[in-house]
Amino acid sequence: MLTLYKIYSPLLKLGLLLTFYMFTSLIAMSEEYVISKSGAYCWFQDPRAIYVEGKYKRTYLGWLTAEGKLQIGYFDHDTKEVKVYTLKEYWDIDDHNVPSFLVLPNNIIMVFYAKHNKENLYARKALAPENIFSWSDEIIVSNMPKVTYSHPVHLSAENKIYVFWRGESWKPTFSTSDDGINWSEPKILFQDIGREAKDIRPYIKVVSNSKDEIHFAFTDGHPRNEPFNSIYYACYKKGKIFKADGTEIGTLETLPVPHSKCDIVYNGKLGNGRAWVWDIALDKDGKPVIVYARMPQETEHYYCYARWTGEKWENNTLTLAGKWFPQTPKGTKEPEPHYSGGISLNHSNPDEVYLSKQVGEIFEIEFWKTKDNGKNWEHYPITQNSNCLNVRPIVPWNYNGRRRHLIWMRGEYIHFTKFNTSIVCLY
Image (tube, rainbow, N blue to C red; front, side, top):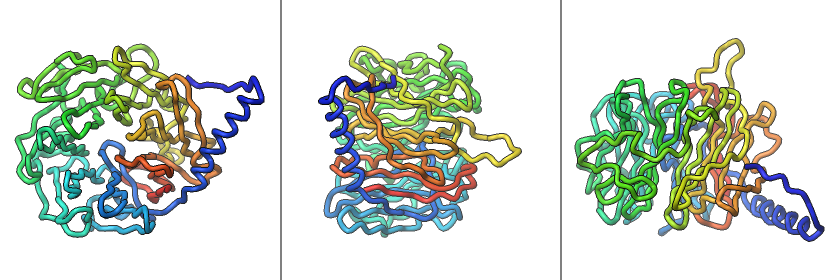
């Protein structure tokens, strides 16, 4: 729900002005840095950027250049230095091919990567803590065909790594490992009853508490193919799958779990448009928060915020986001009309959201904050009066500092295989 503030007293007006001043002061404190002059990423690999504080204070992130180089880099928070390592000299020109990151308890970094709908999910493990320049040999996590995306997590209670991806049957698939080198046989996690066809492809977002839980937000399929595309939720703990209220709906031995047993966070059959999931995080009490876009029309995207209260899912609409953000060449039909500018949660405080919305013909980034679990919001611009796109904002996972810290794509974007964007960092 959008809130229109009416100033009822000079005192309230002063309070709002002070709030705005404090926020804009934090923005002014922050500076922009270009991480890579050429780079893009999709939004279905997580984490794409992660903060690590050990010997150094650094944010690690990955991207694919317009020439097809698969690169990872870091931004040093003390020296403001940017360093880049090329993992693959050519990895196809496709922003789906970017890596995800996992930081092990000893601060050893792992990266996971695959080509878009190609064979093999790969991983590499750094040879020293907080290092991105010396790596193990390439590890094949799975040699199945038609692999895309990756979502690794480490559960300390099990001392085990889980990695999730879209597999051969287009379904959410996963494998586990005790050492990051030897991996179990893949299993399908979610698959709707009667919907096993290969063109039905649930999209999934994953987050964990790093101890004993993994939380999932996922869809029926691609909104292009699903006119009533809905958002679902489930949680893994100690070998079992649960709904948000703790109802057991499956085990690792009885997989896959059908959609019908899971929570329906947003029901696309109620007439408010097909949806696509964007992010999931956990609040300070460990309860899930989900953001997604719903699209009554292809030119009408709305950003929404769903929160588990402990008893039910509460959904609120934040704002109209505009239409798709790719810059469709004149005289052609847009192939990806469900590509919103992007919305993501601050995983250290999911009361905070960053989003990209249409302002005229440009997409700008805004910061949104709620104090009542999503019912009302304050919002402020991060970018203004731009002459190019600003899209897919992300707060690096694990970052909880006082300065604003944000990563996004800036530039021109026609398609996931044709882009001229840079990777920008605010800190």
